[in-house]
Amino acid sequence: MSEKKVGVEEDKDSSVDESSSDREVEGKSNDREKETENIDSRNAGSEEITDDKKDTSVVNLYREEGLADILKFVDRYGEVPPQMFDKYVENNTYLDLVVDDTIRENLIESGLLDTNDDGKVILDEQCKKHKKKIEELFEEGNKAIENEDYEQALKYYDRVTSLNLNYAPAWYKKGITYMNKGEPDESLRCFDRATNLNPRNTRFWVKKGELYCSIGKREEALKCYDKAISEDRECTDAWHRKGNMFSFDKKKDKAIRCYQQVLCINPLHQGSWFMKGILHSNYSEYDEAIRCFERAISINSTDERFWESKGYAHEKREELDEAIKCYYKAEALRSDDIGMK
Image (cartoon, rainbow, N blue to C red; front, side, top):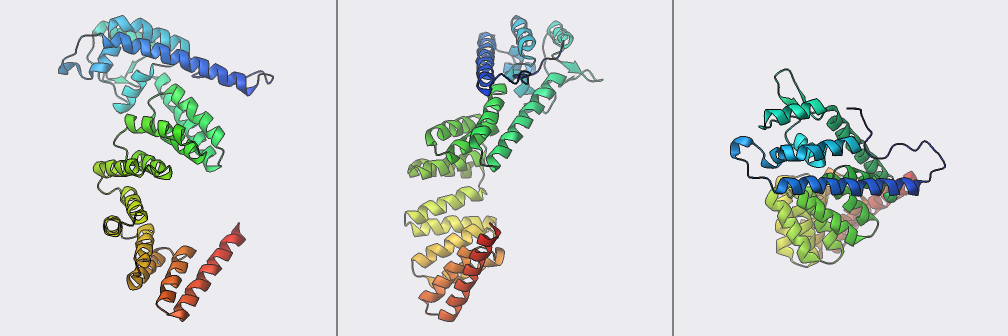
């Protein structure tokens, strides 16, 4: 089968503007989604496959009645349907299907599948190129975020999800991008998609909780942090952010327990030492506050906030010499930071 490029080919005519390319991508994406849905609906009516047939959804995809649709999809877009590609990845590049020998032979003959010396089905070249293209676009999107070029980042992530609607990291990064753009509704939609696709990824839940917290939906935020913790009891980001929420809500004991949980998991978590110190300082517990600030400084001595907060605690204890030293240190660090910029 002749190789076809996935997505839109590079524009050979410089007179064609970017908007026309975007419309072409959108049109092909919509067509691709419709044909993918057709394949799914055809598979939905298939009879149940017994356990010895392995993954039912994959086997159904290869049923003889759906083969023509699959071949037509590949011929048009130069790629296998997303369902097939996802199963390749999930099975760690090997696809061990128990299907009718005739169907298997047809798939191999069509170029959709290949086999190794042992006769085991392996990734075909189109799937490899498909995966590589997605990874390249995803990385370009990440670079655009680093450069704070959010519009460009969204274009890259949109292309990723047009090639694979179930690529959860792209939905997650789209959520972050919209969050940075100040568009919480779009951000939440993307985070919802990411957590639905991969509900065990704690980063997704923590970031979703952060978004909820930023728009004042604190109960929803707490649910997200708790979900992350239920997936991984050692998710320090979730514990730390729970502590921050409780601290803001003046629930001192709950906040302390969360920070302590973080520090039991990671004694070098400077953020929790600092926030625990702030909490003690707010309740006039200056001895304990100073101890926490000193621990934070021992981990990172270049953060002026740590020194300034320690100076304030010394000042409240009327230890003025120590307070002045801390304030001078904080000011020197702040000046250095401004000079570097």
